[in-house]
Image 1 (tube, rainbow, N blue to C red):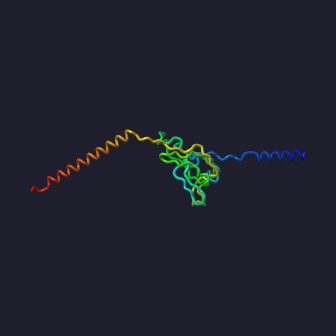
Image 2 (image 1 turned 180 degrees about the vertical axis):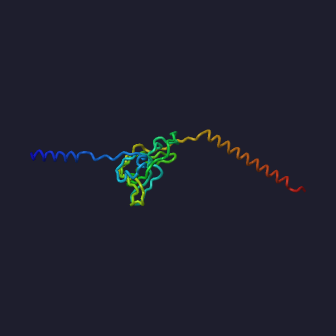
Length: 188
């Protein structure tokens, strides 16, 4: 009987050790921002576009912004629809994770789309009350890319026409002022 009990206990321990760790909660930036206090200290997975700037700090950490809205996959400058405001969070990760990344997103650049796993820190007293995701791992889902934003011919034509009209108006005004000065000069 004791052998069966010992074998059962060992079996349970082996299965528990082999079982995968509990997966982090997958959340969106909107969910995280709707109730940030509820996620304090929770390990989460967040997917989105890295935007703005990469701030590499002397202490070996990199700070940036991760936007979880639709503009990373469908930017307005590339013909995407306006779908509301930006929703994103600050993230902090080891510099080694951030160095090899493509440039962050901006007006003419889509930043890398990443899935980051880390612990949400809500009003972290160690960081002056900052709320951010403390990233432990990062997976690049899609590489960053430039946005082809060709010039709009109609806008260029209207701009050129306005420039010509402005210069013509300025020339007419100068001629008018010269004529006025000539008429006001006393005659000989």
